[in-house]
Amino acid sequence: MQFTSRKDKLHLPTVSSKVAGSVTMSLLSYAVDAWCRPKPFLAFGHCHGPRRVYFRRDTAGSGKSSDVSAVNGRNIKLPTACATTTSAAPKLSEVQMQELFRLAQRADSPAAILAIGTSNPPNCMPQDEYADWYFRVTKSEHLEELKAKMKRICDKSEIKKRYFHHSEELILRHPEFLAGTIPSIDTLDITANAVPELAAAAARKAISEWGRPASEITHLVVGTYSGAHMPGADLRLASLLDLNRSVQRTMLYYHGCASASSALRVAKEIAENNRGARVLVACAELSLIFFQTPDESRHDTLVMQALFGDGGGAVIVGSDPETTIERPLFELVSAAQAVIPKTEHSVCLKLSKNGMDYHLSNELPMLVAENMEKCLADACRPLSLRGDWNDLFWVVHPGGRAILDAFEECLNLKQGKLSASRQVLSEYGNMSGAGTIFVLDEMRRRRHDNHGDEDLIKKCKWGAMVGLGPGVTVETMLLRAVDA
Image (tube, rainbow, N blue to C red; front, side):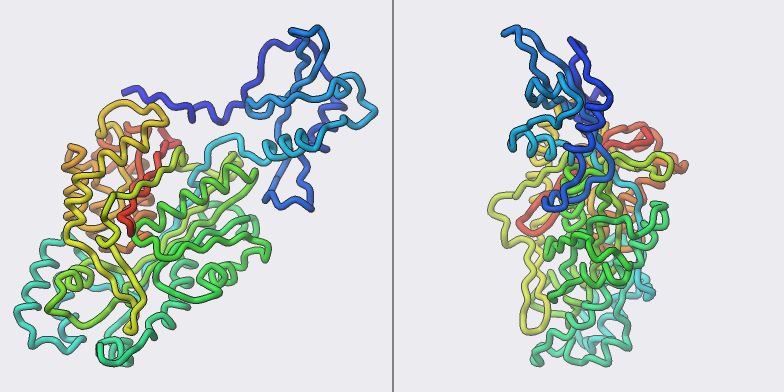
């Protein structure tokens, strides 16, 4: 299949070949220095190095010479004096100055993932032992039918094991976590420290792989719903990593399982519009926030206890990679977001007197099956992508077996196209937003190593990353494998 995309040429500045005149190098140097140097009184982010600025003299039409500055294909008319003198500063209007400076801040190439890191807490629980452990810890072993039901859910989940921050000892120290009659949101006090620490463990791995010092990170984007504090996990994480005090932080709360996709969308915009920016994206979640005793009246509470695990993921995003140090993995070509109509009550999380009350509709797989193809088609349309869905590699959030089955069926995907997502689900469960970063890491390994799925993954140049969040919101990012 031939993919056609305007993004293929984003990194190539377009300059007319019809050059009727030239300017001296001194003028060009002056232009680069005067127009592209970051101004301390303007909050335009970071500008590391001059942007390429091209000039040509256009004598067509009126017969009068005029000059044009072309930056990434955008032409800006400059005064004639700019080409006729090298001793005086060009007299640009305020609008011209602002436009040149704005264009100078833009990167030449699409944003790319430059490094990936993941982390998990130390407590590992085999899935086939979880129902017994859960009903014992919650003192609910007398609910034999409910326990048998949970065992069936665990058996069908295709999950082998999960990792947790909480342990039996921690639960026993906090009986209020289990007694619905005792109001408590103490779980949030535990997550206030544990979430940034888990994110920091993943971030340190990403920074080490990146190969540059943490002090060169210019922006930080953090996603979590395992907390409700101000200042938030972003400030604590910046401190743990010893980032610069000037690092620009963005905190994304309550994006659910789409938090990594949302954070990467934000990071893409930052990297492509702040030349030289390096964005650390970190997501971490703890299932402790909705740990509770089994409720006979709510089937979804059993599903959540059987499905969710704890994990942290981090990636570093940047444009125009330093090829001597940085090794881009996936280009973030295009991002899209869509809301499935009339589904605002299908995935819900709210703060209650007993902590976080999470609701997950059993209709979610059906909603995926009925709406996903349209959401993906709308996301691909601006890039003129053509072909079969099997011509893409897939980084799908591992929300659960039923969701992956519905995704696979509605797109008529070949068996094995979602192997990276199923592998992460099997080894870790649903880690909410962090799970998407784990799938990215697994996809990177599968493209590099021999997993026997070359036709399904390695030969695919283009891919799609998909996350589902409250709304129901579908976050889509079209990817291009740099190793392709």
